[in-house]
Length: 214
Image (cartoon, rainbow, N blue to C red; front, side, top):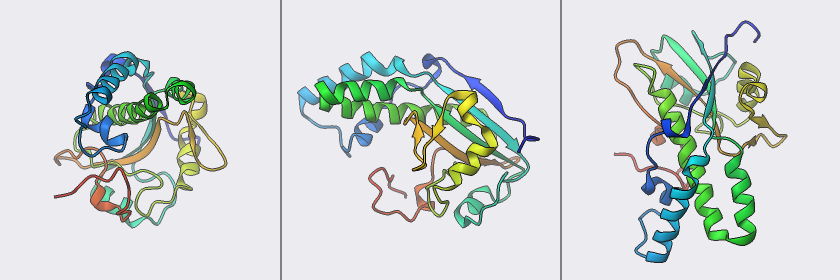
């Protein structure tokens, strides 16, 4: 893996897209924005106070093909026709983890919103990073579809995000900071862009974060 060039990009929290409140509500477990004014006020206050806690960083490698061995048919479908493959790791930093732990003790509902806000922020970071590549496919992550979570080890072997952007992987294959993402996507020359995850590629129909496909 030593011959693969890995680059790092650091962003300011102001570089991220505006917070998508509907997504924060969705990550909180609400498919619709509640009518409850108390909850609405708590959501707005939490987002206003803590959206700037993001410390966005990405490390990535551009290769001619997937830089490790995998038999994932879903990943192969996403990358079909690609001239390049981008493998990346992204994080908005450890501060959301610290805030969540703090508010779990004193204000559990706010902790839930912070959990959701961190998830929305790291997905916004992924969207921002991927938007810099023309002809991009949708992205595909370890643990998604038929790409096993164990592939995290391969991604970490390629990128070494521990030393580059401060993401570590534990024995259960969970990342710290928790608001971190690893994924791959392809570049198809002359093709239109696709963004985010394509939920139609994943067979986990019971996923609470699944988006409806048309």
